[in-house]
Length: 216
Ligand code: GAR
Image (cartoon, rainbow, N blue to C red; front, side):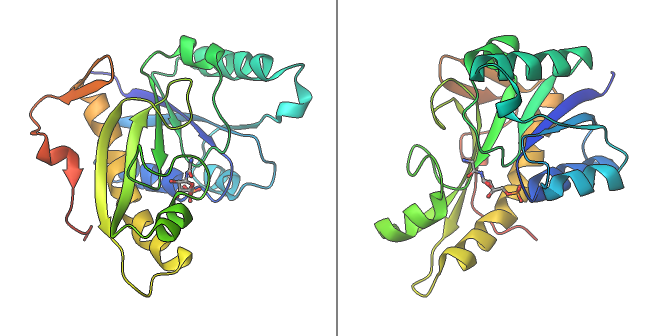
């Protein structure tokens, strides 16, 4: 079976991008990253792409006539390279309809909270300020809402009394790096089915989609 071709969109540091690269390079994930698109010319994700020989494009929204046009052009670049799954890895923009329609249930996002709680920016800070005792992270398919698409996998992450935004973010991030490649692996193996907003995974129980053990 040919490799799943991934297109990654990232705006910043790109540690999730790196986690996916590492899984591929260590042969635990049968996929290939064929393109990185970033909206931020100083994103560290670009350095990671260069280091690993991955093609990248800097596409800044202000250089396009409208938001829709921006996402039409992104979809074109991804289609040109025959991308089978689009991976948002810290891409800090709401994806618009033209891209979603071009890749129905083929765009994933990772969010640093247990959705539907705390969508949008600063999910970790929102959880701390709300006073929840368990937070986590969520991989979901992208729809037109903000972090509202069908949920694929979640990891529950404990919060401690002395947590700061930084300590909590760091703890959640370790789980992000585990569940994002895992969700992509399940997709690459054709094991994910979506009906409405219900995602079922062949060979998984419901409990398996909620990872509660700390990553090694
Ligand atoms: C990650 O924590 C990711 O969950 C979050 O941005 C960070 C990107 O880190 N995404 C969102 O908040 C999207 N709403 P990274 O660039 O090191 O992967």
